[in-house]
Image (tube, rainbow, N blue to C red; front, side):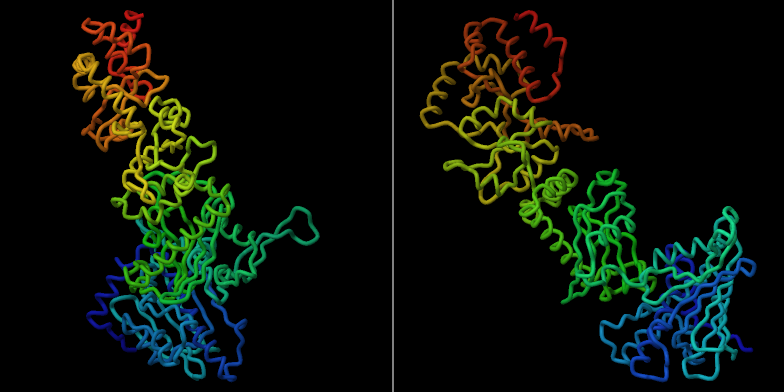
Length: 623
């Protein structure tokens, strides 16, 4: 019997496939089951117009048999089978696949799902097998054939006997080594797991004999082993069922089983999209953030299927970072996949699907904001920080997409507000969106800088997350209203008369203010009088884009480069403390008061003071 050699380039490709293209050796089973499904598809398609086939869809099946003693895995199908010429063409010529040609020859529409169009998956068998033998008999043919190969050295084809049409592939596994455990694929539980993971939605039953322990008849505590032919796959994907057939429990149970979450999802969306790109999707928002969600270890992505076959466990390209909390899957026939089916080509179809999914997610979140506010607030508590980072990242490129999804605590009450709600409630004459930053609502409410803003009847957004102020800086405006920190030095709240009166007092006491500025050299840009303070004696404001809160956030990061906000210490000219200062002008106590007031202002901002011992001594001395 003549051994036929693979072509030189085919030998190189086969060697490359075995050793490098596939990331995981377990992929071989997915590929062989997919090929078996294709073979059945071809005969099933023929049965729709050819009564001689004499088979219904229920008659087709794929079977897996394990033999630990012989170290073999056998995959059998009762599909269309192959002639000697087809064995030569499909298996002897690497990178040739009969599936795409079959679709072309038979003018199949897009609804006819032929999985094997991607090519050479059959050769993944050589990652685990030292010898592969294929027995095949084409439907309607009298003669069966055997194709056999031990890899790159070549293959043989000879006549053989088979009782019925179809294909049987026998893999003789390699021996175990220190690095590889091929025997694991002879374990029933391992095969069951692989079928469930990769081939659960193959639309024909994948069957295997499984041993079950059952109570022996007539006894109460004696057991015996029973061998049954079990179907390992679900066959019909939930996402391909009509939405009207499914209940909320169906969706929730699928999510909890598929993504191993002990809690049902907060929300879900079942998508069937047709158009420039066709796909089905199930998208879920978890009830709680995973424990590692805000860490570098968290990996975003949706499961990616092609015709019900799992291609990628987490396809990160399908989700932008700001929607990385979404879990679920996408199944499409339109994707261009490379020969290993593991690496997705970055093509137009993938980008179209990703863009469509992004719009779907945003639409669902907008719906929740408007129609299911309590649920949305729970969602935002878990994942809102990610949306804010999305606004801040990429130089604000996504702010239009995300700004209407943001919620902020505010001085209005306990319930958070959207930016749209803030602007709608602005009284006549208010030109800016006011905000204040701090660790908690309570800490912000106690800031002296808020007094004048609240006195005007203006609402203040409370920025309690480190990213809040950075996001506001990237947005710059919302509906033509500029964001303004209540701690900004150029806060413009007074009337012209009030501004003129303050300027006159500033000029009157300039010598005292200059004296205090000298005492705080290097810590503040200057000391000035303020009209924003009501009950407090002192506060700190900032000049420029960098605020004191931003300084605190940036300096908490693990970097040697530190930043410093340009601070102005503002004094309340109506406060008794200022009257005391004017009485002490020209004495050394002015410098001590300046230091004490600066430290007091820092404490009000939640900032540490440089010298607690000096602060304590000054209090005692000046008391």
